[in-house]
Image 1: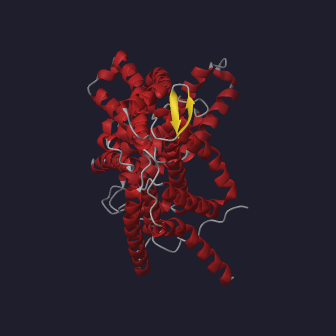
Image 2: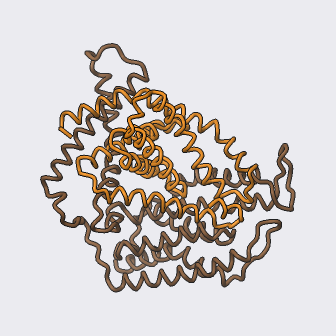
Image 3: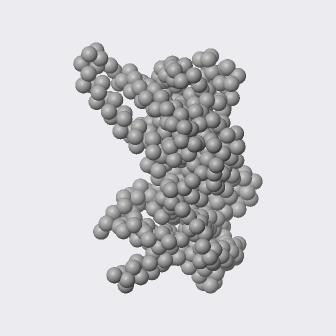
Length: 207
Length: 290
């Protein structure tokens, strides 16, 4: 992709879209192939809907989005594949309120990745340490920003130079830092009460 | 004028409009050529006016036009290249070629958004589900549930907040952060418990019994759908060849040059105006029947 953009192929926007679609599709097909039980699938749908609704509710404040935080919680509680599915579905569903476009697969991929890594850290038991939890929460804002900058710079800026790429990243850095800080704030607010709520449901229904 | 629901693609299998719109989106994204982008943009705008009506299209354009301007202006700021210097903005030089590339990309983005919106009107959720393979059950269920849950959750969050503020026994009114955390955890518990109960009830009604998924609206691939699909595939193949010809001759940098002959762009125009043309023909035919 980077080579294509540097070589100045004008159709890079379309090709990067195809790559993002393929990546999201492969991850979702692996989720489908893992045949999750219905009792695991339903909480995934609920958490994705909660993330999407949260994004809609917080839409008046720019770059304050609870999607990353919910995806990390989902990854920790339900596993890495479910974390990816929550992030990706939340991006897709909430974009029906904000407008679909060529950025949708990239957002799906970026938030899915945030949930997937959250799930991986959760499976290793690292998320019980505050530093790792909030560290990944903050880094997720930067990772998300980097992926979405990459989509814009690779596809829509020509000719591509290191200077222009750095300029684009520098321009979006304040927004990404806001996103990361907001994710940390959301995680601090919901980690304990939501963990309690999920454990309560797990105990009540013997999951 | 309130828009009438589009009717042109009601009678055919969902794959026909899906192939048409997917082809239109793919070609608009891959053919980075000002004329191709302009043709696609006009076609998408026309279909949006027909299928969604003037008011909805204008509401969409209210944020899409600023987006176009933003993408157009970002390119010369991020990458200064070209030969026709327009003006200098601080340390950056703004060239005509760079601005033209930005405008093309902005138009491309808006055209793709308009195609997506048009496709969303034609391919409603139940028709999209019919496109998914019959054996796939997890993803269609996940998407369908999430889509229905979002409006429900938004309504329930209002209900929870109203109940809490009406309940005088709940103590002093908490701060904003406390209230948000409380509302969101209540909403989560409520929805999670309900979702587990729904899962059990779906299981009791035969889910996971190994049979393929049934569908609410049967979609059957008839011979004329197959013919339409073949026609669309042929048109798309022709368009790709023409777009390849047009784009390989075209250069933005260092100077804009290499306009392709008009016949190279004709198939792209046919593709861009096919959805709105089909819709117009269907509406005229329906009016003739009355």
